[in-house]
Image (cartoon, rainbow over all chains, first blue to last red; front, top):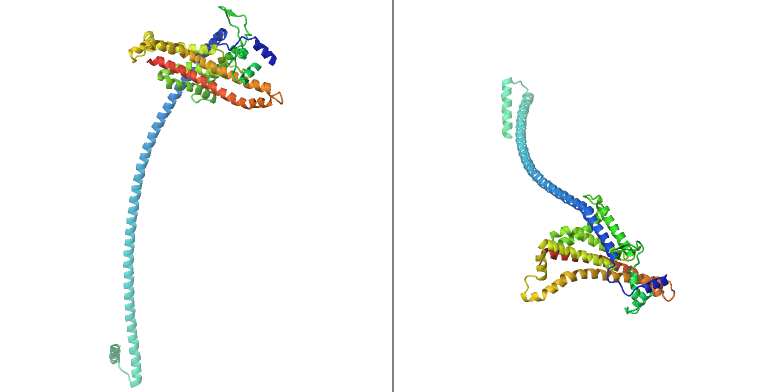
Length: 178
Length: 270
């Protein structure tokens, strides 16, 4: 193979050919012209159409996105406003509830105090009545005992009125001694 | 081939040694070999077939990528759009808003030059059509016609050439020497440098790739003497391919960008 190439090389004229080969020039220009024509008529119209469509779609999408963004901002503002309203309302309700609870508590306390007072008074009255009753009873029993005692000592019957007067004197003496 | 290697070994004493190097680039026609139009032979050789296949492939990629273009792109469509977007960025940044109508031309330039360069390291071909003078010359001439045409259309014939050759705001005395310089730089050197930059890079790249691969091919089997050189070439070859891929993209970008610069200068004037 090397010999064949060397032979081929030996037959060639000297140096690299610096002038265009007309056959290559002409056929090359035809091929290039066809390629350029194809590019201008088939490739670029379709490509430019697609690019224009893409540009308009992107533009449309961006505008849509802008609009959506503004809409979202408006909704957010609305939402925040209603949130603030709701918070105010909640605060107010809580305040009212607190006030109501305070009032209820106050009323309950007042009522409880009054009831306690009543109970206390009733208890005091009842204690006083009981004491009076016991005192009365005691007085009666002491009287009877004394009469019995005295009659046993003097061995005589006293009439009822004398009896009673004696007893009263006796009790008075007891009370003053106490 | 051995001569190529020898020349590389001898530190670039090319004269006499590298005469057959043209055989790396020039291939005989093997289709329509007898076709002649106006005395020009239009036989189809390997380079022409490679360029057709590459341009057809790129055309097909763009057609299939945009045929059913949707607003939400598929990966394939996104890839094609990315390629167009590179050129749209070039057009907008260099030419400005008026540059948008040149995006198809710049895109075609960019992808065509890229795939024609890419054939250099594409396993089936291993030969860039842009390393033949015809392609760079054609592309540079196209750019030349376009930017002059744009200048005439936008500024009018007299205004465009007048302002280009006699730039305003320059001391009157300089008008003696400026027109020839401007003529040369704007209308001769611009297309010439466009073409030569691409051409020379692709020639050098093709030689580099060939030398690397032939070194592996020739030296590696010849144990034990050649294995060191062969192994080294084998290790280096991915780096060479990566470097060439970088150059391939860079040259396509530079050509497209400079075309945009020239179109921009024609639109604005001085």
